[in-house]
Image 1 (cartoon, rainbow, N blue to C red):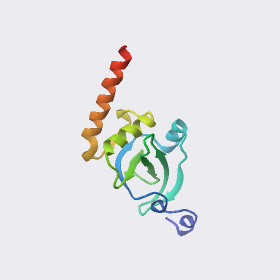
Image 2: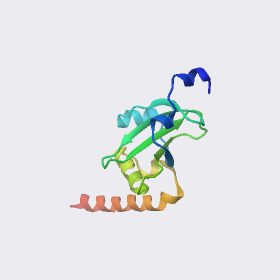
Image 3: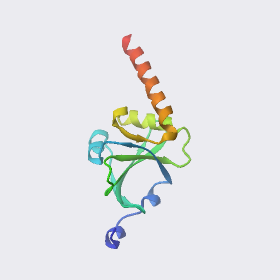
Image 4: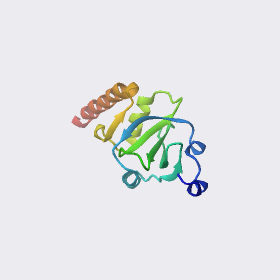
Length: 133
């Protein structure tokens, strides 16, 4: 990172409450911006320059979508506040709000993966039941 560039940017942790990475999706910011009407802003952290967007979910939870510009892995990180309760439910809400499927996930934190997939399976069963009537 060059000093000149960081002078014009605000560090991510000054804009967003302390967060933890809980999942990653395969999409890149341009695709998510188009399909979800989200605006990604430039920033930086102790690792790299990045772009991020904040998504406020229908029930009030907030997630940060982060893409480190020099990451060797494609995709966007889904981050939640470090003290966020019921993270699998928040992840499921995020996927629903962004019209994502399980196939869009490239990584889910092992602590939340099983519960998230159970929630998605239950939702799918419920949806199939409703569509039959």
